[in-house]
Length: 75
Image (tube, rainbow, N blue to C red; front, side, top):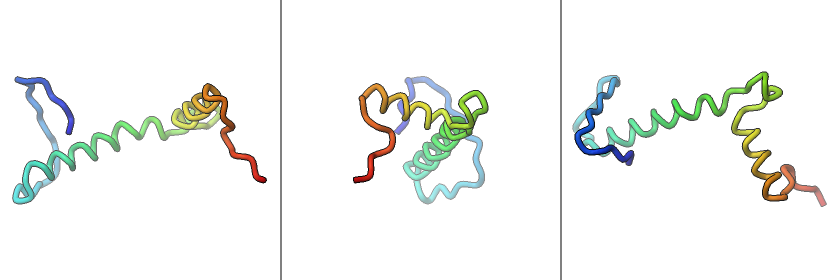
Protein backbone atom coordinates (compact mmCIF):
# COMPACT_ATOMS: atom_id res chain seq x y z
CA UNK A 1 0.00 0.00 0.00
CA UNK A 2 1.22 3.50 -0.77
CA UNK A 3 1.54 5.60 2.40
CA UNK A 4 -0.32 8.92 2.21
CA UNK A 5 -0.14 11.65 4.88
CA UNK A 6 -3.35 12.54 6.69
CA UNK A 7 -5.59 15.19 5.09
CA UNK A 8 -4.17 14.47 1.63
CA UNK A 9 -6.57 14.59 -1.28
CA UNK A 10 -6.05 11.85 -3.83
CA UNK A 11 -7.72 11.96 -7.24
CA UNK A 12 -7.70 8.96 -9.53
CA UNK A 13 -8.44 9.24 -13.22
CA UNK A 14 -9.28 5.76 -14.37
CA UNK A 15 -11.58 3.83 -16.59
CA UNK A 16 -14.84 2.42 -15.31
CA UNK A 17 -14.15 0.49 -12.11
CA UNK A 18 -16.35 -2.21 -10.68
CA UNK A 19 -16.61 -1.16 -7.02
CA UNK A 20 -18.11 -4.54 -6.11
CA UNK A 21 -14.53 -5.78 -6.03
CA UNK A 22 -13.77 -3.38 -3.21
CA UNK A 23 -11.31 -0.65 -2.43
CA UNK A 24 -8.47 -3.13 -1.88
CA UNK A 25 -8.64 -4.24 -5.50
CA UNK A 26 -8.78 -0.62 -6.64
CA UNK A 27 -5.70 0.21 -4.53
CA UNK A 28 -3.80 -2.74 -6.02
CA UNK A 29 -4.79 -1.67 -9.54
CA UNK A 30 -3.66 1.92 -8.88
CA UNK A 31 -0.35 0.73 -7.41
CA UNK A 32 0.29 -1.51 -10.43
CA UNK A 33 -0.47 1.32 -12.86
CA UNK A 34 1.81 3.75 -10.99
CA UNK A 35 4.63 1.19 -10.99
CA UNK A 36 4.30 0.76 -14.76
CA UNK A 37 4.43 4.54 -15.25
CA UNK A 38 7.49 4.90 -13.00
CA UNK A 39 9.32 1.92 -14.53
CA UNK A 40 8.91 3.13 -18.12
CA UNK A 41 11.74 5.76 -18.03
CA UNK A 42 14.17 3.27 -16.45
CA UNK A 43 13.53 0.77 -19.23
CA UNK A 44 13.96 3.20 -22.13
CA UNK A 45 17.36 3.01 -23.89
CA UNK A 46 19.26 6.32 -23.99
CA UNK A 47 21.73 7.50 -26.61
CA UNK A 48 23.89 9.14 -23.90
CA UNK A 49 24.25 5.73 -22.22
CA UNK A 50 25.34 3.94 -25.38
CA UNK A 51 21.78 2.78 -26.06
CA UNK A 52 21.59 1.02 -22.70
CA UNK A 53 18.74 1.56 -20.28
CA UNK A 54 19.36 3.40 -16.99
CA UNK A 55 18.46 0.13 -15.22
CA UNK A 56 21.19 -1.73 -17.13
CA UNK A 57 23.81 0.92 -16.35
CA UNK A 58 22.79 0.94 -12.67
CA UNK A 59 23.04 -2.87 -12.50
CA UNK A 60 26.51 -2.78 -14.13
CA UNK A 61 27.74 -0.13 -11.68
CA UNK A 62 26.37 -2.05 -8.69
CA UNK A 63 28.08 -5.27 -9.84
CA UNK A 64 31.36 -3.35 -10.23
CA UNK A 65 30.99 -1.91 -6.71
CA UNK A 66 30.39 -5.40 -5.33
CA UNK A 67 33.44 -6.72 -7.20
CA UNK A 68 31.35 -9.23 -9.12
CA UNK A 69 31.39 -9.99 -12.81
CA UNK A 70 28.37 -8.81 -14.72
CA UNK A 71 28.35 -11.95 -16.82
CA UNK A 72 29.14 -15.24 -15.06
CA UNK A 73 32.01 -17.28 -16.48
CA UNK A 74 31.26 -20.54 -18.27
CA UNK A 75 33.17 -23.46 -16.83
